[in-house]
Image 1 (spheres, rainbow, N blue to C red):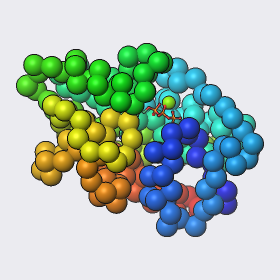
Image 2: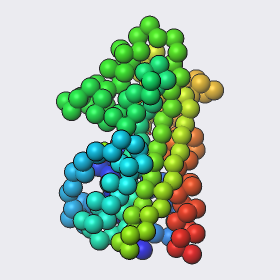
Image 3: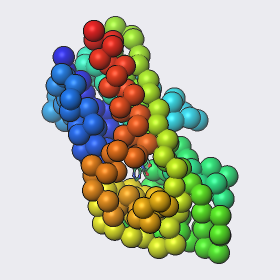
Image 4: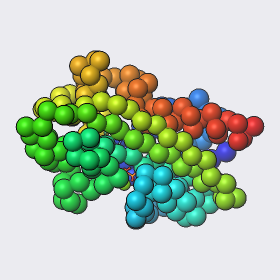
Length: 195
Ligand SMILES: O=c1nc[nH]c2c1ncn2[C@H]1C[C@H](O)[C@@H](COP(=O)(O)OP(=O)(O)OP(=O)(O)O)O1
Ligand SMILES: [Mg+2]
């Protein structure tokens, strides 16, 4: 069975391929099937946006589609940037611009607690939907550290390791991360669904 990954984020693609690699499914990208779609993320929750992405790509490709909506929720910022993580600071910022803005908005703040949240939604052409979620606790570093990963990884600290997500291997990140947890649960649901 062929699944399309309903994302334009290459960092997510890499992690999804690694974490779903044991499933007996073929995974392709929208570009592999000649589709280039910008899905408007109009939902107010990760769950709504994950489903919007999965349904849009399912409709456009006719294939079962897996969407991921995720973000970083910072306690001292009342959960921001949350669902707006990719749009934090406006369209013109890149990943580094966004995490630098986050660091400056946390300047002088001693409460550094934060978590990543990931919601997965999978839409089947027959209308069926599978969902899964994952969460990873951590803290906002005082300065960026490391060069691996993507997005906010250089400023997301795992306190017990004393390292950010950008300082650990992708295998280690996948074991601990919000996406890793969500995709492990999701993989079990897909196996059960496909029988
Ligand atoms: O493991 C992660 N490590 C670092 N940063 C992360 C992670 N997971 C999500 N993030 C950040 C990236 C982006 O700023 C936002 C997700 O936004 P989100 O709309 O779900 O993804 P996106 O726009 O990058 O790609 P797409 O919508 O095509 O799947 O949270
Ligand atoms: Mg997005």
